[in-house]
Amino acid sequence: MPKEKGRSLIASNRKARHDYLIDDTFEAGIVLSGTEVKALRMGRASLVDGFAMFTGDELYLENVHIPEYLNGTWNNHAPRRKRKLLLHRAELTKIALKTRESGRTIVPLALYFKDGRAKVEIAIATGKKEYDKRHALRERQDRREADRAMSAANRR
Image (cartoon, rainbow, N blue to C red; front, side, top):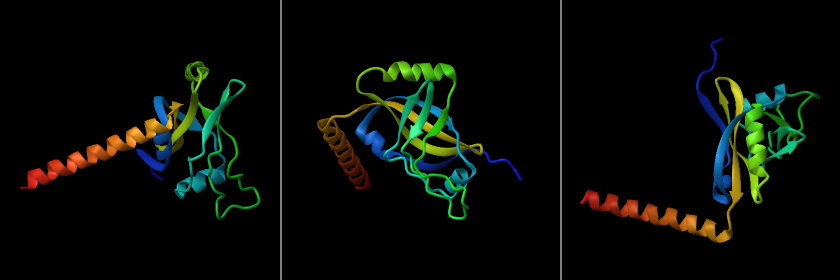
């Protein structure tokens, strides 16, 4: 069987980009059981309520929903269990130092397979205020209207 190449997206957290200002991103490996990998290969996962947290000096991904594998047996996994993230020690210390600042958190942005291995893209983020969210929506809407006007002018 040939080895997989490239990146295939499983799930993305679009809500995180709306709710947080993304400061820095990291790619981390993730420790999974066999039934979790099979469920991910079926393209089923949700990152919406997920976050990462330090336990001791290790980083764990929490509250990410990977549903049970349909053909699994009695040794199926728990859908919202803590999953260890695999990062280099230097990256872990960098993340730990940045998250000590007030208002910073670690959120997952995307879950994907890269060359056959499950990876998660995590970000150090700062929460947006409600008016920041409205401002971002207004900017996106204004940009869309300007693009429409430009394309309509180009058609004439």
